[in-house]
Length: 231
Image (cartoon, rainbow, N blue to C red):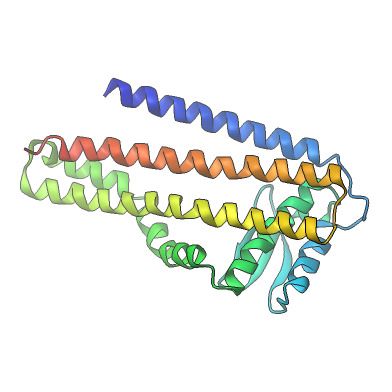
């Protein structure tokens, strides 16, 4: 299992590097002020209007990097800095979150699949590791019946989280592509501003990719612990 720990450590390091790079990118592009003078909220509202979406509200939410689209109440939630600021970073985030609203309005299949998994993952993700560990303690690694099935149940829970993380990838990449296409086609940004928004969204997408790989590595590890001891 030494190789697994090396791989897991490498993934953790890459995750930290990507996250750190993302923060630096957004900080840098937050200094690239928009020539059109529009705030993140105004950009979001215009993108929704241009796509004929009238039933989604753009609201401000506390915190940093808390931006998200909520399909349940149809709201584009922008962190205070994105909502109010007028820079390339704010434009990128606002348009990206509206990209999810467009996905919802057009019944984008990957978003639909992810939305269906949210209730399951919200319940199982926090307990899956404990269930697997409990099953191992009850004898799963030795192939003992009850403990084995408890551990398998934990693996299934963990599997939902892994599937969720991989389904998230096309959802996030597609939202960014929709955002960038709209920003470009509507001439919302200058060339410099557009490049900044594009670069910021690319780094944001990479955080999801690393998270998905990490989730798969964890599932494989625990799967070997449980299934590897059963002949």
